[in-house]
Amino acid sequence: MLKWTTEEMSERMKIAIVSLGCAKNLVDTENLLGILNASNQTIVSSYEEADAIIINTCGFIESAKEEAISTILDAASYHKKLIVMGCLAQRYKEELEKEMPEVDRFIAIEEYPNLGEILSEVLGERIINDYGKTPRILSGKPWMAYLRIADGCDNKCSYCAIPLIRGPMRSSSIEEIVSEAKRFVQEGVQELTLIAQDTSRYGYDWDHKLHLSTLLKQLDQIEGVKWIRILYLYPDEIPDDLLDTIEESNHILPYFDIPIQHGNLEMLKKMNRRSNPEEILERTSTIRKRFPNAILRTTLITGFPGETKAQHEENLALLKQVQWDHLGVFTYSKEEDTPSYELEDTLSQEEKNQRKNELMDAQEVIMEERRRLHLGEEAEVLVEEVDPLTGMYVGRSYHFAPDGVDGCVRFQCEENLPLGCFVKVQFTKAMGSNLIGKYLGRI
Image 1 (spheres, one colour):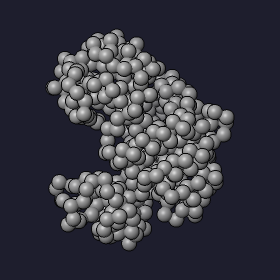
Image 2 (image 1 turned 30 degrees about the vertical axis):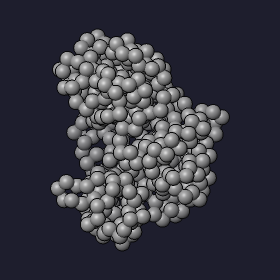
Image 3 (image 1 turned 90 degrees about the vertical axis):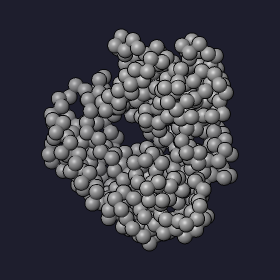
Image 4 (image 1 turned 60 degrees about the vertical axis):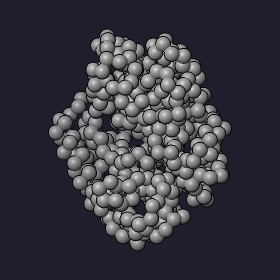
């Protein structure tokens, strides 16, 4: 859960904002902050001092829904004006309105074009009705920004509710994205991270062609940008020309986030995924050949309806064969109105958890081996904080994405380094998911 304070806002209504879920949802929250900022409202960091509370929810899987409901009930106990928006509100608005009368207004995603009008009515304050057009306010570290290049999804994976919640894929124009990126860089942002439900499919909704390479080439030319990172690439949509663009660029990192979901062909077909194990192996092998320092990340689903022990073993085998640098595993969650919802859930939660643990245990060994490969390597590190317990500086190299799931770089330094600067570090030790290094100097 994240909360923000924006001290530049003048004293009007005091509003606490909570954003749950993924980086794509965070962009919506930052768009909300944009119109509140332009409307001269005051954002506060605690429920106690707030006149109103706005919660932007996730509704992707069961655990996310549980977190959202818990957050709403907690906020309701403060008896302030309470507004709930986001994926949960989009998916279950009618049911929530009946079951949670303590919420003053549920706002579905499809209502965002009128978000200012709705907030004006509920809050009794004039909120400009310019959502998505007013510059968004970055809520995280000022040297990093997410660029959402598209919203919605056309893939229709059988387990996934995102197309139901977010609708079909809608790519933002190259001009809009580049303009926003330039503004962020002028404001001090040094790392741009591209996100979408399917980033590799960017622009396909225009003319059934892939346009990510074209976008990347323009972003790479922005003066002042340091790093460009891409998340959510699908294995069947990483053509050689995209690899050419990354290889020939000045700022695009060799970081490949490729959610494959499973290593068994039959499971992939049941999930309605277009890729297959052979294609996954070919693409990851090609990437590693072309980028010897490439970082590969993926996510897997275990316990999908009908998954046999043998299919689980194939999932495990592909994991070991690819040797992912970073891995996340989800146990299958039944989601209403998705094609897989009607399938018999053949495994108990205990069995699903056991398979998840087997995958993660294998990954733990692989991760330690992959980390050791970097010992002796010198790399640029973006300094992000100082550990209050050890006094060590904490940051990220190209190996680690900004979403907090990969790990970090830690190093000692006698100098007083400003946060957000780049330094050179030589890796000397691997510790869990982190790399420990020796400080070599400022860049």
